[in-house]
Length: 208
Image (cartoon, rainbow, N blue to C red; front, side, top):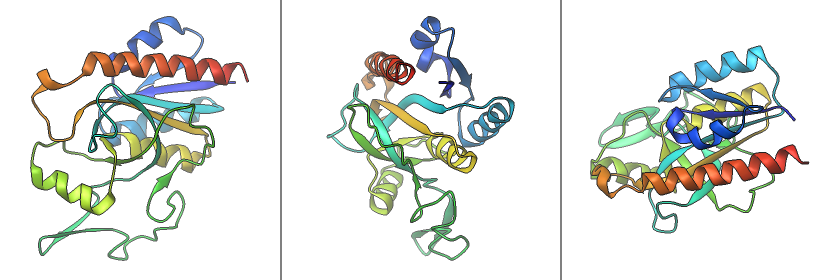
C-alpha cells in the first residue's frame, strides 16, 4: 500500500518521519491554500492508496481534552461566507453553491472511510484566522456545532474527495479554542499522542 502522510509543519510529525523512511511525507505549510496546492501537486506526481493528514488542533469541548487524538469525520471551511446584519451565512445559505455538489455532502466535506482506528470521531471546522475573540468561538459553535478546529483540515478533505483518494484526518488536541496563552497548551503531549497513533495506524494499514 502506498501511503502519503501530510502535515502542515515538520514539528507535528517529526517523531514519525524520523522512523519511517519508506512512507512518503509531505509538509504543506500552514493554512488551507498551501495545503490544497501542495497536496494537489503531489497527487499529480504519484498515485497513493491512502492519504493521512496528521496535526494538532484546538478543541471546543471538554469531551475532547488536550492530549487526546481523534479521527475527523467531517470538516468545513467555517469562515467561507457572508457576514450580514450581525449574522453569518455560508455560500450554501445564500444559494451561491449547492450543498450536495461534489465534494460536499449536506454542506460538509465528509470522510466515508469506515475505520476509526479505535479513536473518537470528531466534527471539525477549518478557519483562516485563529483568534482569542469570544464572539468568533461562539459564531462557529452555534453555526456548526464542531468539536475541533484547524487551519488545513477542510482543504485536505476537499482535495482527497475531489481526487478520489481514500483519506484519514488525525488531529491531536493541544489547547482549547480561544486560549492563546501557550504555556497552558499541551503541545508536547499532543505531539506524542499524535505520533504514537499515526505510527500505529500506518502499521495497521501496511499489514492489511
